[in-house]
Length: 274
Image (tube, rainbow, N blue to C red):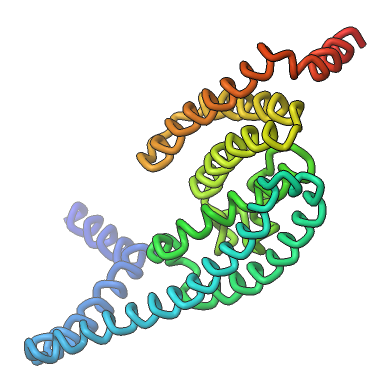
């Protein structure tokens, strides 16, 4: 009898335990919801079910169409910026680099307006669901921003600076941001553009610039060697960097054997002695 009495006391105490009470409430709530919604699902016909799904698909298509319209405007602006910067490859373009950079930065103001509009076209938590729509144009814009910064200071633009130029965030947690792989792709496009600039610099009679470009690309190559690239697109881009570097080295070699790079060699020797 004593055992039965203690067993009853234990059962009563367990029934009053907060965890048990909460579990019972959750179970009752789930049971009520199941009883409420299951008949409704069973009553839905196949036609009604697919009509319901079509509503989701139509809404998604509308979002994608709105995104595409903004991206098309961004692509047009990117072409305009590229047109402005392409003039630096002309013999007279080297003298106008400051004015061309200023004009490009003015056009980036338009880019920021459009990126601000793009942010409003989809739920922020679904960034990577629609990322494919603006991925390539943002890689192009990252390259253009990097090119402008290089022309101004002959330095590598940071991801933070590119994000600021484009009017977007760096951190994923803050919403619409610059994906790190898009930034790296833009930097690799810059390397290809600088290899072209090195050749055109010689044509314009600027024999010092190719050597500075060579040093910059060598540092860039060393940096990318530190990365374990898993993205196939980036790996192919990086393979292109090797050819760009080889092309620039050939330009520097031709300058060296013709004695056209002596000025820079003397400057470099002076810096080392200092």
